[in-house]
Image (cartoon, rainbow, N blue to C red; front, side):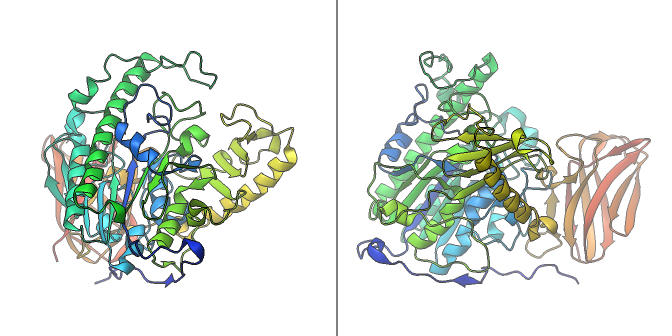
Length: 590
């Protein structure tokens, strides 16, 4: 039998460091504090009361922010999976193998060291609840990446094609879902955000003697915009576009669809606000508030047009509206609350900062792109004001000079142009003097623009030559750690933009353990009889005639597959049609 992974419960190769100077954690402070990292999905910078939104009601988060260190220039990626891979590893997402939100590009390499794995050095108990979006099969699941306990949905969102247990629920996918508990399907009752919170608070109570790391990643307010009606009723009569008439900041005109979407988003955020209140209350009840570091942040800008504090761009954009998010950190024994920090910081800084505060070693065999923020927080030292931050996002694979940016100090170079563009085809912004990115000064300051472009070129070349992009992570089939395995549309590559199409070319990048398999193919709609089911795997094809009329499940039993790394290409051929399965279940039987 050929196995492509040597399973290790914890990755090694770490290098030690020590806390020095007056910022050493005092004797009254736990050496290994509990950590709760809360992240929401598609909640923009403006979707909070404390950031100036006059319509949304977020009393818990507003109060929490007033007790916290507030990073007012905190940045992430333009979209979800890249943000999450960078957050959990301290590395630019392309180094981890994550290049997209689907198209097979949201699978993080198993060799990456996550915050959870790093904290395992100090015997932290670790739990992940909500959205993962970094791999739905072994070895990319939370249970394979350092988490003892996990309750998650699949793919990029509930009700999306990759989440095979909620997609067919349609308009009720956020309610009473089948989720994945430690890699196994399990039914739950209630609304998704409430479920994830209840699981998180249960984990906290079970591990109250600590230390623990709780990663609470709400899938809301991501589409589909489903929310309990009691929350929606609080916003059903508001006009989300009102109240900005005398505001000098840019404000994009909202359509009626935008306004209705905003009402639902605000209702979903209010539900999250209540749920975060439950988490903070649980800490008080267990008398562990002072021993617990709590972070709140979001993963990118808003998907729909609404208030975003005047910034340009939405989710998916490298303009500030797509990448600037709120970031609040509260840890009473070490940091005074109600403090604003204007220095630029980013998602890649969270892992090295937690390593220092939690007194654990950084991953020594990985290039960490982030920096430790502790000296900045304590006021002991100045962090480089002129650090560079790289931003990009295009569908499927990075494109040179398209939706790409480099920010350094007060200047930001943005490319929405061709691979061979001249410097005048770029945009240059002085974000200190022009925080809304309205005035392109590339011709006035071409020397600065060229300097930034040279650095952008260097970083881009380095990242796109990352090992995990050149040799992408694969799904292991027939592993003793997951059998059967489901191959879903989120992890499928092939034709760009694979979603819910029937006639589309698709494939999965897999590492197969040699053996006999029962393979089930699920189709979006029933397929006609008298076609043939094909499996193409590297050097040969298995095929079988289907004589069952109007079935949406075809099964091939006792299929012998050798051990190999390959593109797994299934399709149903009938007449001139080639129909790609909606998902595939592969079970190794011997």
